[in-house]
Each structure stands twice: as C-alpha cells, then as structure tokens.
Length: 176
Ligand SMILES: [Zn+2]
Image (cartoon, rainbow, N blue to C red; front, side, top):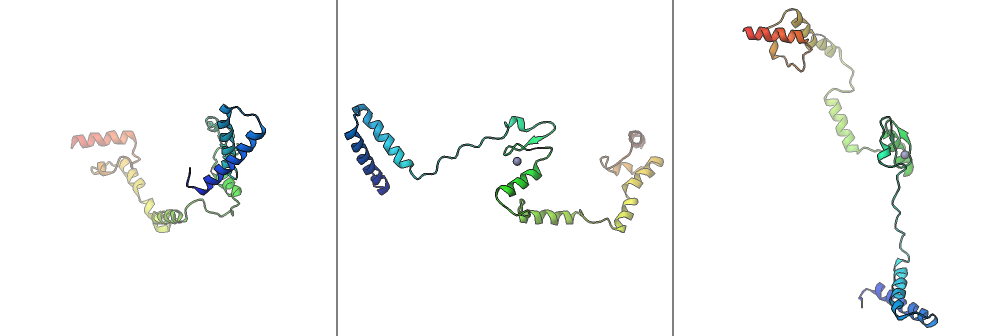
C-alpha cells in the first residue's frame, strides 16, 4: 500500500467502484484486473489537462523551402523573406504591442554602440570625403602611369590594379 494520501484515496475509490460493479455485473475472474485497471486509470486522469496534440505544420517542412519563397509553418503564409511576418504574427499571437522588442535590449545597445564606433549611420564629414579623394584609389591611378618600386607593399586584395599592371609589377620586381 502507498503512503501517499492521494493514492490511498484513489485505491479506496477503486475498491468501492469495482466491488459495486462486480455485484451488479457478471465479470469473469480473468477480467477483474482489467476492470480495476480501467477504473484506476480513469480516476487518475480526472482533472488532468489533456495531452496537447502535436502541432501539425501548414505544409511539410520539406515543402516550406522553395527556390522562390519560404512558407510560414504556423499559417502557411508565403514570402521571399518571412522575418517581418514572423515578428508580426508573434506579436499578434501573444497580444504584444507593436514596439514589443524581439531583440534583447542589451544586445541592441551593444550593436548600436559598435555601429557608432565603426562610423556607420553617420554622414560622411567633409574631412572624410577629402581624405577618400586622395586615398588608395588615386594612388592606384598614379601607379597605372608611373609604376613605383614600393608598389608591392600595397595589399593586393585592396588594390584595384589591373592584371597587366600586376604582371608589369612582377617583371619590375624580378629585375630588381
Ligand atoms: Zn505565419
């Protein structure tokens, strides 16, 4: 016997119900355990929330990714990008305000501080524009007409020199 009062109460109920049932109905001895089990399970499941049925996607997951669109598994909406739809349906589903954040505020602050640090979102100042006009692009223009011996110090990845310039440069550095 169990020490749990709830289980004891259930067992006592099972005894009452099964004995009452057996008195009024003919039950084969082999079937009594089935009757007891059925009654016990019914009593235990009373008051319990039904098991949530597994959610079925609007379309199969395989069909939700197409070359031209992706499909919302919740409602079947199609779009080239679902980010905005998911954000809005999430807010609608839970009754959230339109400005309810979907990005952690601390992370947003970090990102915006970083963007400011690297100069994003700021209008280019006259100083910056002047600097860029005499920047690497102009050096490259000069290189095209008068190759410099220190040219190889410029990173090839950042250079816009043409292939012919590169081979000319390689020839000149081989001659040195
Ligand atoms: Zn949807």
